[in-house]
Amino acid sequence: MESINFVQTFKAFFFPFYTPCKFQVSFEYTVPKSKTINRRDTIYDLAPKTTYCLKVQARIISERKVGSFSPVYCIKTTDKAWNVLPYPMNVEVHALNMKFLLSWDNQYDQNVSFTVQYLSGYLKRLPEDYSDKWITVSGCENITTTQCDFSSDIVISGIYFLRVQAMNGYNKSRWSNEIKVDPCVVNEIGPPSVTVSSSKDSLRIHLTPPGESENKSMSEFYDLSYRVLYWKNSSDTEEKIKEEQLLFTISDLTPLVLYCLKVQAFSPAYKKDGHFSDVACIKTLNDKTSPLTILKTFVIAMIAFFLFASFLIFGIYYISRWIRYAFFPSYKPPSNIECLGGQPFNSPYLSTSEEPTENCCIIENIVIEETDQTDFKDYKHSKQSTRDSGNYSNDDDTSGTKVLEETLEQETA
Image (cartoon, rainbow, N blue to C red; front, top):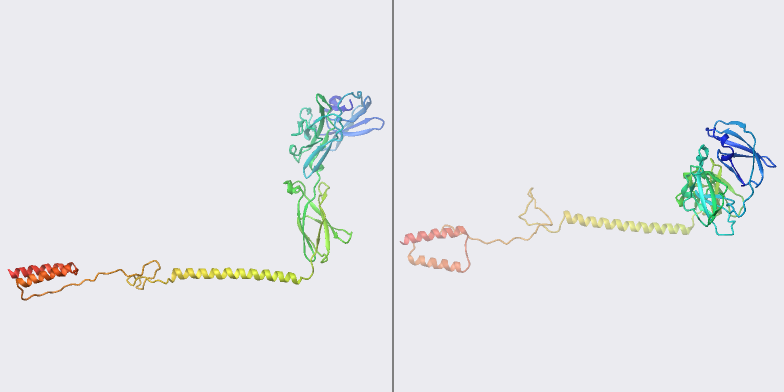
């Protein structure tokens, strides 16, 4: 074997400590070395068939207390096994804008697959055995590539350990050296997005925080500040300013000069500098307004004025027509329809045509002094002729005629 497992070697010494603490291990092989470990840990990359001696010292970090060293313990590593699949080497974490990739070297001449596991860091501070607490990263079991994306398996606020194992059929390597991952520490801050506009003597800059285009804005995980470098394109002298806001202005510039700039986000709390943005160049405007600009402005203003005036005139005309139609109609109602106040009632909804009326005549006070039978017959004949001709009277006339006939008959009798 090429490593020392402290679970087996120092089990009697480690388990009495239940206060969170670290262990300082000093071991000798030609040159004394020191390493800080947890209660259960492994020292890798030792020489085979070699005797190592070590001693352990406990330290309580929260109280800044240091204990005494344990007695020296010596152990010899075993011979290197032959025909054993070597474990993955150079395991590294690459993180940009909270996207985490674990990579390792492909040192195999045969077809192998890999499995990646992770462990929550707090489990190493507990006295219990955590060897069965390792979890396989989703999508990274029996893979043939030499990288694994574990972004979705971790929480940004936690600390994790990762390891890789190579497999060729039933032949498996030992697990690789564990690598510690503190997300906010190992992550790299990407470049911000920059939008620039110019005036005659200033540049107006609008920034977008790194990662926002990927729905993972770095401003959610860090208190970001921004470092701006700008210079004249014809000069190598750079000016530097620091900004806290996403929208700001660089003033006191020279008109009609090409300026270039780049922006970098950084976190003062983590002492972490991000990547610079791409260089953006823009020319400041002329101090005087050109005649062409004045002409364009005048033409646009005149077009807008005529459009507004046309709309206003059309609106007034349409409203006036509606008012005249509703309150001053051209048609008048019949004269026999009057309003309550005695004034003629005008409304466009009433017909003005007069209804046809019947012409009636009334026969009043007919007196006959001398009558005879012949006259009565002549009267009846005349009356019959009158009825045949279509002339008639109203009900009162008919009633009077009947009375007259009765009177004539009585006199004749």
